[in-house]
Length: 165
Image 1 (cartoon, rainbow, N blue to C red):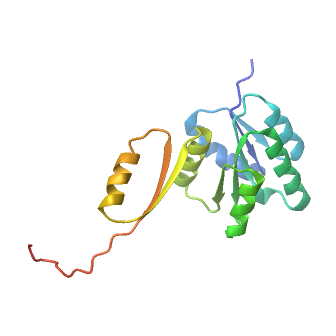
Image 2 (image 1 turned 180 degrees about the vertical axis):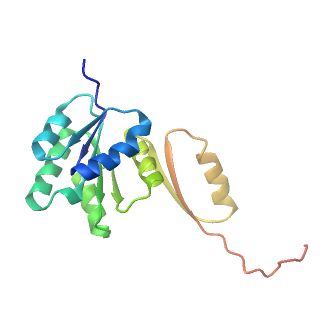
Image 3 (image 1 turned 180 degrees about the horizontal axis):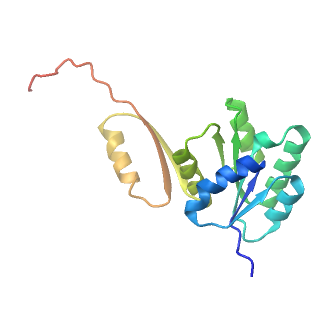
């Protein structure tokens, strides 16, 4: 009996091998697809939950056809691209992607984003600083099922440094 496949990695061989090594820690069944036909076949499998799509492996009409296949599959998918423009991220979201990861990516960042999409976690972003944000973040991090991303700014002009009040 064949092992079930949980994810499909769509892209060239080097990309697929690299991503397969990263997701190996999750003990998931992985299917690799290098062209439209193999991608469509893999996405038809009921056990496939998530696709990881390397937009750089396809150009022009082939990329457009692949995005149609991904959208029609109804599966969650992540787009990876080296195009660092805001337009590329917006385009990936318009395709129906759950997430867009920019290359080169940090391994930990990739794992966090993959984990959030695969496990359908809610994504929460917080920007700011101060005690109020700290208290909010302390509470949010205890809630399961959340991918928490924060940008915190704390500054001090040093005006009271060394003095007790």
